[in-house]
Image (cartoon, rainbow, N blue to C red; front, side, top):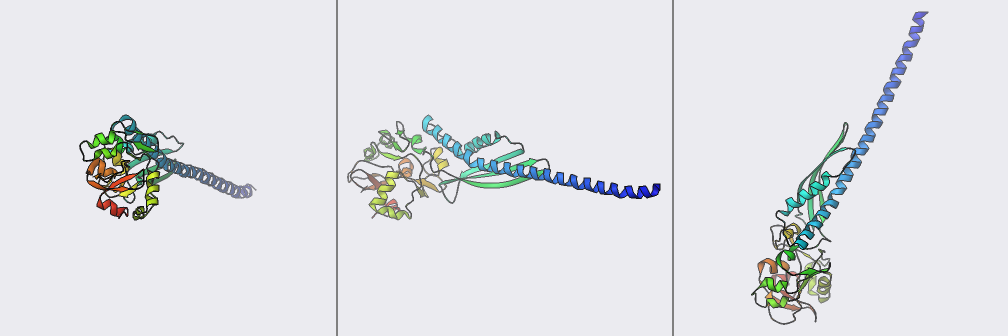
Length: 291
């Protein structure tokens, strides 16, 4: 009789043990699934925060240059450190390690900054590691370059007004007085008129000037180098027009920002209308389709 009972009980214990094992497995699977969701969600949030923080740091750095009449030494490292400080202050339920490895001008398009980072997120035994590269547009940021070169200039959030500052900067340059009360764009905006030869049409050129557009340039400075007060650099950069209101047939320094702030070579007058005038050298006349 006892043997018969024992034989009946053993299968019950086996079934109970199997049920407990399955239940524990399901609980563990559910626990791991929740942790995995938390890890992926946290990773995405950190990833999404990097370009937002980078853009804000670039903007604040530019206004430091503009308002404090300073330049930034090694802007890539400066911005990288500021971004890293902000990233380190982010708080999550998971263990997060985000390392900003580099911040540099994007080699394929100077209207972007490239941010490279490594993000590690872990919760218990669930871990996700990924190296990522993100592009941050510089459109909408202010141009700090002129403020590193000229004193007594101002801006109205749309354009830079040089007053007498640019003439003073040019010193004894022949006909430098043509840039009395000159203006240039304050906010980086990519010119939509491509190829650039279409600027040979007066309506296109007029619209470009009135909207304060910037153009790709092999000679102009990238945005990070502009923070350093450099008008030219080794990266693909940007250039814009500095507008004269002196309508005459004389020649003076070409009206391209990197020429005025670094290269100092002569341009010939191009009268757009009764208000605006440019002075362009042969290479920039060709670039912008002016004959």
